[in-house]
Amino acid sequence: MAKAPPRIGARPGLSPRERKRRLDDRRLTAAQRGYDAAWRRLRDAVIVERGLRCDQCKRIGALWMRDATPTMPVLEVDHIISVAERPDLRLEPSNLRVLCRPCHSRRTARDQGFARPGLRW
Ligand SMILES: [Zn+2]
View 1 (spheres, helix red, strand yellow):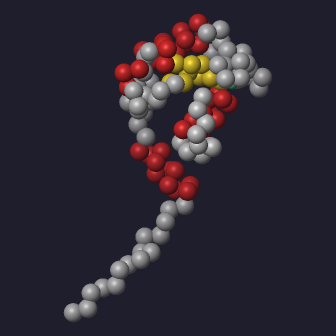
View 2 (cartoon, rainbow, N blue to C red; view 1 turned 180 degrees about the vertical axis):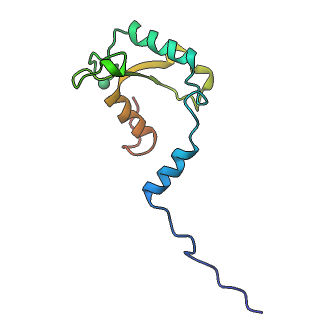
View 3 (spheres, helix red, strand yellow; view 1 turned 90 degrees about the vertical axis):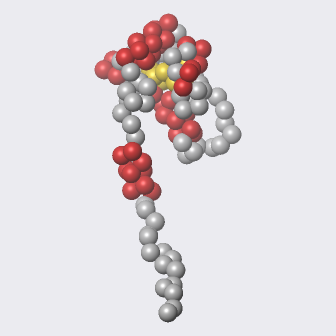
């Protein structure tokens, strides 16, 4: 009996949009990813301690989203070495830096492979 021919192309590729949606569905909640109460306290302390200033563009920003303006974006705290790489450094102040949301978005895009590789901040 003849074998069935290989079914090349039987599963059409997903569009980038659909692929992203499926990835998002698999993401854990903020708390499961380690962004819990201890993290939020540390985050606020680090932002205030470092003068409400973005470490990248040196712009003064806002501690809370509700205080943000077009010229004063909300500040976020970034892990210099990602939590995925070093979970033990998650709450280590020397592994944290303050970035405004635009700078943080650029860095996150790079981490996810959408920006030029090899650029290390
Ligand atoms: Zn910035």
